[in-house]
Image 1 (cartoon, rainbow, N blue to C red):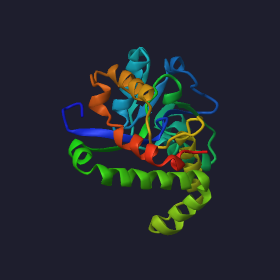
Image 2 (cartoon, one colour):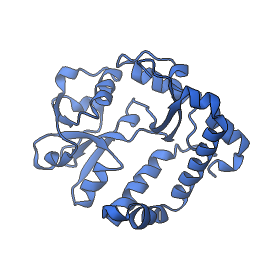
Image 3 (tube, one colour):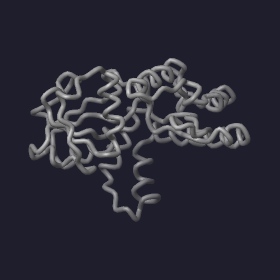
Image 4 (tube, rainbow, N blue to C red):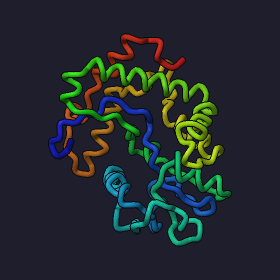
Length: 239
């Protein structure tokens, strides 16, 4: 998108991005300023978001020691690093289920209001296959409503059917589902799952602009299809 690719975000599962700073419970980071003087591990896949977060909040990058690590935060548990840029619905759950006391600071809760798990498609698909796109979004909303209504069944299906060859841990899978559900809900009555408000879209643009991505809302989003789905199917809104 930033390079001119004809792609648009048409919806987002998570009203809050799942990225967080994980720390040990006896050495927590609860505010951005508490990152100063800390050594934070960051996988290469998370580094663009992490650098953007630092810029967006106006933090002094020189006072935070960011070190490259692989996609495993286990080094934090033995004091090799003070924290890790991870996800509340995966690595945090894994370490807690292994018995570690893990503290989290969700980036979206401290001034970096990105949405998460976005749906992206081409402008051509939006223009030429709008009804098919809307049908897909409609089906996705129904699926996520089922997950919210019965996370245990969602976890059981994941472990025993769709992911039965992966030897998934049932408790961890359920806990990941619960953590994800908390990111989906935004606390508003009649929430429209996958939809993004104008204010939220603008806040996302403002957040990423600090990292040098100069995009407009229209450059990044096309929210017409998802809004049409909800207008045409008011029963899809959460009670």
